[in-house]
Image 1 (cartoon, helix red, strand yellow):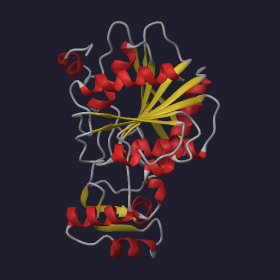
Image 2 (tube, rainbow, N blue to C red):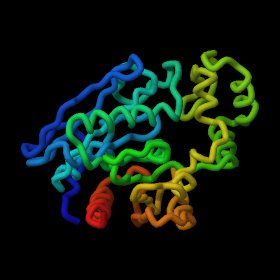
Image 3 (spheres, helix red, strand yellow):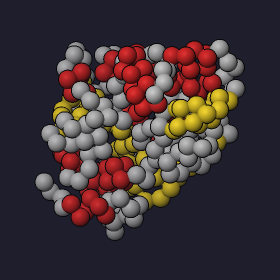
Length: 293
């Protein structure tokens, strides 16, 4: 490994190295301010950029994202790590569970598209989409529905998998109640109607609009990233962790994806967040993938 453990811990902050410039940037979308952390590597402009999307109810200042940006910068690669709005103006930090949820899984695709356009306006001609966990599924969903000559490839780190049976079993195990009656009730309600004391994603007894609940829990094979990647039209690298208990069996599922655009690797010993030196292996695989394009 090229880097020390201490360097990875330092990556958890948003302090840029002397060879890197970092700043928060903004754009307006559907009445909301979106923000992102822009990191420009030494002697690197906007031409080649990674656009990084975080996971479920998360944010761009969590360790995995800041480490990712720092290590890319060490390789001379600039990046833009976005915060999905989740329906909030200028959102930062983890989503606060008591706040009413009025956002949809698919909101991310339009926001990713806005940032792609922002980068193109800055002169980016080679955009690599990159994402972690649920963000990996949302990124694959975006690239499946949109074709842009500036988007050259995507790198998905532990992207979400899905099956209707697993979703129902997981909800019942977490909340000790069945999902189906709640979902059916939400489907019968106006989308803007707020459901109180409703267990939702990671939030117990949350307030959530019916439309949001349906968006995250309705049966849709597109929630399964390997399924989406059957039709991928851009080179895609999927990186799995052998000890990932959040997205278990990802690497095995990827073996069934018969698409020459797809490369998948498994990092032995890595969990869902690729902590400590496992991000070094992510970067090594990333560099090999970029060299192959």
